[in-house]
Image 1 (cartoon, rainbow, N blue to C red):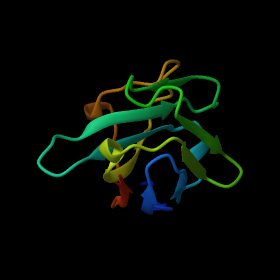
Image 2 (image 1 turned 60 degrees about the vertical axis):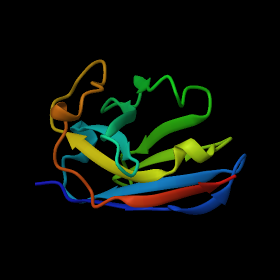
Image 3 (image 1 turned 180 degrees about the vertical axis):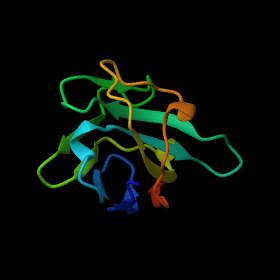
Length: 126
């Protein structure tokens, strides 16, 4: 079973940048599809980005395209989310998630993923 631990969240001004990291345990990380989701107060969890096991294919929510970049380092069992040009509406708890299906095209639905990390808070001030 893969365990996921997110880090890198914090408080940043609008227009700033943050890089989230998700460290995974388990020897089969390189075969897992990885994703990032977020949940703002009183809102449902929503898809942010996902990356295939090889790193060759990615998917993004329209709201973050051109601003966020997902990447992975299979040698370090880590997936990253580089967030640039942050906006107050990006404020949320960000969750890392794994799927043990080697999707050619990463899924965007939360139901395709599990297990999940504990989340890291990102707050963007205006």
